[in-house]
Amino acid sequence: MYSGILKVVYDAGKSMEKKPALYKNKDEEGLRDQFLFILETRYEGVTATGETFNKNGKTDIILKYSADNSNLFVAECKFWKGTTEFHQAINQLFDRYLTWRDSKVALLFFVQNKDFSKVLETVKEEAKKHPYYRKVNNHKGESSFGYIYRLPNDEDKEVFLEIILFHFDQK
Image (tube, rainbow, N blue to C red; front, side, top):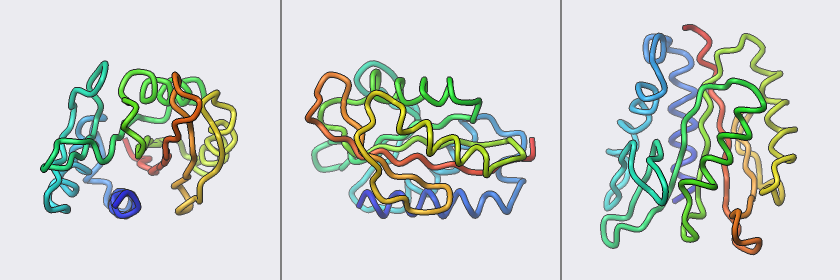
């Protein structure tokens, strides 16, 4: 199901790139809601919510199994603001929002830079420099990169992290 969720998010974001009216002048929450709108109606027996409390804060997107309320997917959304904030976003997701049972996660970056290719290369380089990084895990597209990271307090707990970037260059 994780692969399916990632495909829905990636395809929706790529479609949005072609329709500036969907992202122009939107803040992070407005963009997040575009993805929630699709995810809410996509999966039976799953609830999708935004700004939902998990562990020590409110993450942007959570999909939960309705039957037992367990987390299926956790995602955080950010505007791209460079490498320092890229690493801070990883720290925020892993240090504040993930419990030991959360192993399928994503970071969605909304990139306004004109040189999108340079940002993609930076992400591929910087993702491997983070202290929680373990290995590459099957990149799924031109701007969707899969990794295996570890939890901060458990060297043996693997977390599947997808970093997905969208080029929303019109402010």
